[in-house]
Length: 277
Image (cartoon, rainbow, N blue to C red; front, side, top):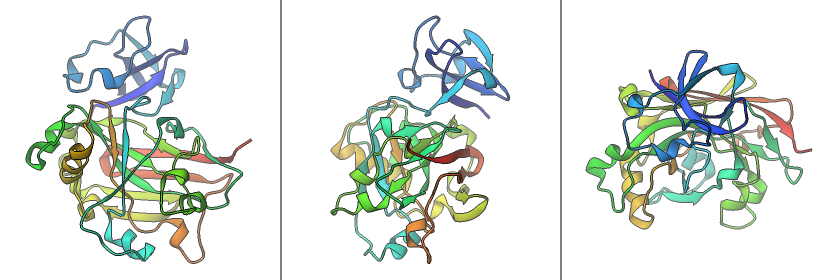
């Protein structure tokens, strides 16, 4: 299974590559920063390696560190709709995150001092490979470069200052994206992959992707209607029920915790939690 990552080389420059066990094959440009989104839509398997590094010698970045857009789907599992007490709508709720709110696999999620209600949300992330506008659902999956894992960490009180989501979703270091992108041909049955979140080893979310109210193809069609999609754009497809904010008693992330999000064969994203210094 081919896994593509973004990382910083030992000299600190940004690049991207293919992860082969504990070896990173650098697929970027020689001696210059290089970014995964610039080659999406092409044949990634045909890219030659310019160098190789031990995995331990590079620093992971979010899978796409510089997406033009991050579009997030809210309330896309009936279990989550039910636990929030909301009514099921005809169309999905869409909100955005900023790229600089995200960290990579292994880096610490940062709880800001403005909250004690720092929540996890395990999700499937879709990376766009071929851009387009008004993409028909019938061929929407042809526009997917790959899949990854996302933790849409949420500062719940700021999310609910009013009816908007954005303030609770964009504090720096509160979301995570990684560790790698897996191409669609390596995921034989996307619907059967389970979104699972564990907090300190306890399973707190567990649901198959097939339970999504709006599937990936519909979401691509819907989002591309109001916003042209470009290579490297990311669509985060929603979280299952079981979020900490709706548990009795509530279960929030705090310093010293470890949060793991798995999406079947796509991978596991692991992040410790710290308080903002």
